[in-house]
Image 1 (cartoon, one colour):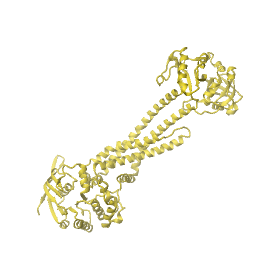
Image 2: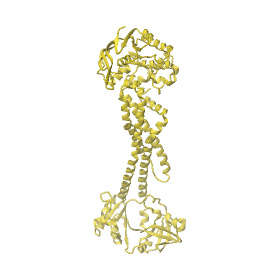
Image 3: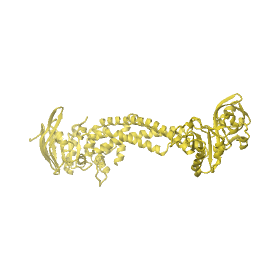
Image 4: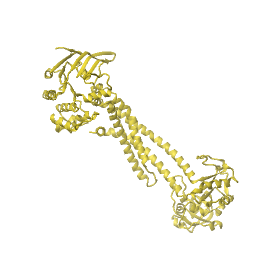
Amino acid sequence: MNYIIYLIKSSLEDFRRNKVRTFLTSLGILIGVLSVILLVSFGLGLKKYINQQFESLAPNLLRVVPGKIFAGGSFRAGPGSLGTIRFDEKDIQRIKRIKNLDYTIPTLTKTITVRAGRNSELTDFFSSSEDLFSALNIEAEYGEIFAKADVAKKNKIAVLGPKIAEKLFGDSRAAVGNNIKIENQSFKAIGVTKSKGGGGFGGPDFDSYIYIPYKAGYIFDPDKKFIAIIAKVNSEKNIDQAKRDIEEVMLTRYSEDDFSVIKQTDLLSAITSIFSIINLVLVAIAAISLIVGGIGIMNITYATVTERIKEIGIRRAIGARKSDILIQFLAESVILSLFGGIVGLALAWIVVFFVQRVFPAYINIPTIALALGVSSAIGVIFGVFPAKKAADLSPIDAIRYE
Amino acid sequence: MIELKNICKDYVVGNETIRILHDISLTIKDKEFVGIMGSSGSGKSTLMHIMGFLDTPTKGTILLDSKDVSRLSDDELSQVRNEYVGFVFQQFNLINNLTVLENVMLPAIYSRKRFKYSIRKKALELLRRFNILERKDYLPNKISGGQQQRVAIARALIMNPKIIFADEPTGNLDSKNGEEIINLLSELNRDFGVTIVIVTHEKYIANKTKRQLFIKDGTLVKK
């Protein structure tokens, strides 16, 4: 009989005789591991979801926005972010002259009421140029998207996201060719975009937007201002240079604190870092239940030691060393804790499997290692005190114990 | 083989110190068959525990093969118990969640020695010799007292010890089973040269041994 096999066998034998106790003890660890793993997997899912949302936008985009944000990698609201600064067509023309830019897109978004027949909805419009569609990878599902000429001619036409089209017309296909009223201005719906998913978790909800040519959009903003400018760089390697060039151009008209030029990756890392911190806090709270579970294991191991003092004495009499007794009880608490960890992990896996239908949560290898590592560590940390107590019993007192 | 010199043992009960053993000196020689007699409370079990390295004396020296064991560490004492000594107790003291065979093999699990022979084979051989081979997969509480005590003797023998200490080995058995156990121990001494020390209060058992020591109120008395 090998020493390790023997240790495991005698622990399992003990659990078999105390099924209910074993189950209740490992339940604490089970719940702890389950909640930690679920939160970690949801956090991973959230990160993946945000990444997906960003990937769905075309790469190599620079955004010029009011205010100073992402200074030193974090948010800091400057005076510009309060909405005092907005951009105009002059800025567009100047940025357009910078080399390595494929196109420069003005954008104005606003929350508006849109009506079609009796249906009325509150949504956002995107007043922009025809290049917006290629910058954001938006294609028409039905009808068509507007063209350069539509912008120049100030045509009062609109392209609808599939969600808003369906809300207004019941069926998104039916929207094409019909008139809608945006804040009582009549626009003709010429197309419905393909669904891009998203929305729901605070991300941009492209499927609910209404897109109109920006020159037609001036009727909603007599100042003819934009709240953001999107610039598409021709190649990834030119992004940093283009960013510096745009900043230089903008500085001729605005002060440094009035605007920011943001890379897609800055935005992504800022958002994911915020969510990571929130997730970490949640995981830390859930980890408290692991400590509670560990205390349960310590409690029951103390009880087991007391129950088996005589047995410890017998083992010592036939030659077991202190370390043999220590290892025996440690093995029991680790196996107990690991058992809770494995079942918790399995349950988390099942939950994640079902959640995946609506949200991209997932469990990766480090998460599994975390679950098994943490539950073994808890077994050791909370098992060592009772095991030490068992090992330190004097052989003669233990064997005389009744 | 084992030599006790001026052994005293005190117990502290509350504020009082009680001396259980008074200045005991004795020698157990190789291949001896010794009976330690005495009434209950006379200190004979304590003496056996000290001789068997389970307990430590308050005063005095113990020599094992002429070496002083008082300086041995706890681990070294464990090793001595494991390799030199076998115990047989009145209440059998088998481990109830291990099978008969596993109980017999248990001392070998704790040994750091490399065995030249198969422990399992040897355990089965002992069980066969003691007529309990068919009980090898039973748990101890499912077999009779006589059988349990034979398992305990098999366990005591698995490491080929130099000496076996038996503390009232028949105390929990009927006379027929008791006699079998005593005969078995005599055989081990006669045929295999195992040194045996039996602690008992029964005259007829002591009479089977080759030398008797009497202990009264913690001192050895001549008879």
